[in-house]
Image 1 (tube, chains in turn brown, green):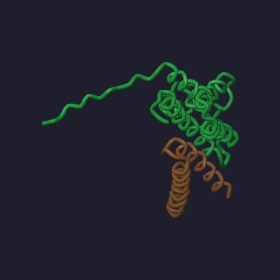
Image 2: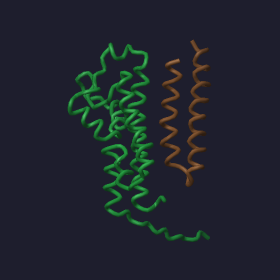
Image 3: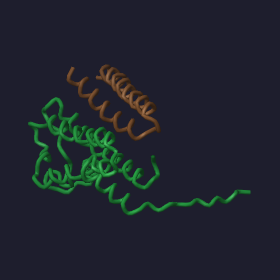
Image 4: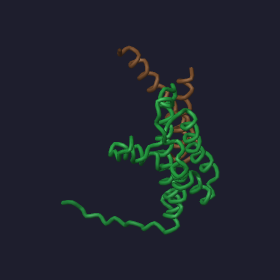
Length: 55
Length: 140
């Protein structure tokens, strides 16, 4: 659980900076930030499951 | 026939360079100077959180010296850490956070801590570029 929380915190912090930097309107930034966050989380989970099966 | 295009390059004013420097030195300060309060809070805050959470999780900062010898492999992570500006410099001056001892390395969050410290610096480089672009009028 701690690992998941740390990964989520990392994804959130990176998404905040990426989201704030990109796009033009606040709405677009919010959507982009959420997209980056979701991407970090999904990729992190997929990679962790792949690595789980590799001895 | 290739049409030659003349690209006009606008020179950035000196204040933009200073703002960029301030943004690197104190995370968030560049946007504070530009009165972009929310950006300063969000973008600068993310770097500060990365730094302190990274240290709290047992991560260590990189410098040139490893095991008493100068190691070239330390340079890339050191550059990433150095992105945190004064946070890195003050830690270096008081020699805090650079120890890479086995006790610290045995912690479950050790690698997370290192990653947070590295990413914090890299995110601050982005903050610096953002503040520079705004100050130079290249970004609204």
